[in-house]
Length: 241
Image (cartoon, rainbow, N blue to C red; front, side, top):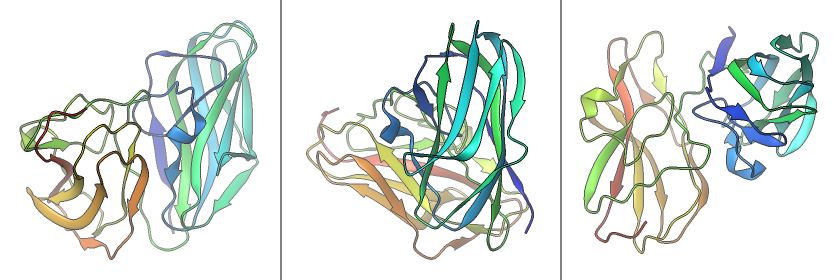
């Protein structure tokens, strides 16, 4: 099994005692909102980051499993790079992971944050979009589209071509997961994986008012080199947000 690179980029300064994922934006003040489902057994290693500016004291980053500190942690004094080159952490399927930021001085602006991941079987990675404070989706009776990278944008995209990206090297599309922070809708919201502009078999649904993390780990969809993948969000009637 080969290692894959989890890479996160954030242009905003992180506040002391904040949490984040390895996708989208960071600086969340609620730890549980940033947890990602591991979905299958994997080992994480070489947790590392670069601080571009700020950090008049010492910044410390810690990898978490299920909200608990793991062995991976490192500190950066001022600006520059830091990495835990010694420790690694094994996660089982359904374990939740994220990271925590602490500082003793001014807030830090990061160029990037990264870790290696090695699945216990096969080769793959985690791909997704996120926003630390969430983003509203409230277009009734509408399907919009989301890319598996970067910031989660308001209401997604109406044009699917704008968020698709081509498969290179993968042969399966597995484990769709969605976290909803707030939900004032009174009917079901549906999230699906998309392959070549058509629905895949993975589905995460939220009934009216439901929040939290939903993961569909049912059998994977087969994908081939050159196909496109992304996700869709379908809302029913009503303008609740």
